[in-house]
Length: 117
Length: 115
Image 1 (cartoon, chains in turn red, orange):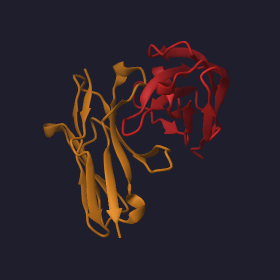
Image 2 (cartoon, rainbow over the protein chains, first blue to last red; image 1 turned 135 degrees about the vertical axis):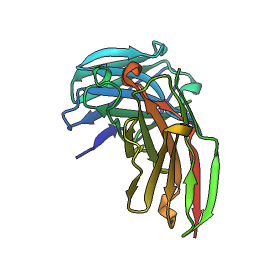
Image 3 (cartoon, chains in turn orange, blue; image 1 turned 90 degrees about the vertical axis):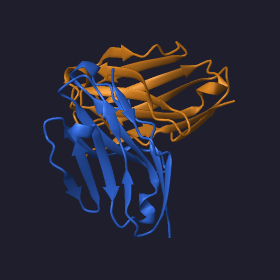
Image 4 (cartoon, rainbow over the protein chains, first blue to last red; image 1 turned 60 degrees about the vertical axis):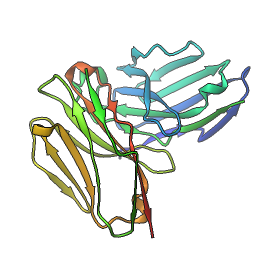
């Protein structure tokens, strides 16, 4: 089973709202990723958690706050977003992440389409 | 530094035609890994294949085939007898042991298959 689930599928929020995106995997993977994808562009890496520790933060603004409560679950807390943050947010998981030597396959969820008004 | 180039922005074909997607990569490492992902309109990136730099064998999986040529730093993907369900954006990606698990994606190629 190579399933990564994400909720919600769609989210509309105002610039003063606080919301959270959720991602879950049950493949026993120890690395989880958040990506942001704008229309007609490839995904851009935001964060990597490896063994429940934040390993990579690609200089993401603090209005995005990731959280990894356990190795199966990854959240992205959103606060005071801007309209330019509207995008598809993808979660992925892999076996080990930064200790995997680059050979790991990342498995992606269906994404959350976020619209900031 | 790593770089992946997918020069074809969009390819339109009629059903049952073959379509080849080009991927050219740059890396200084001798060990690296190449991937292809499919992204249908629903949004999910679907993993198609991983190839490591030491395995130059071409691969076929049903109507999909991949041609890996280290001499030209290319990892091209062919869909034989295309179907409407093949309509999607296809991404080629690269990683290596120094990339800390990060994937370097190409810009993607939109494939449109019309009946």
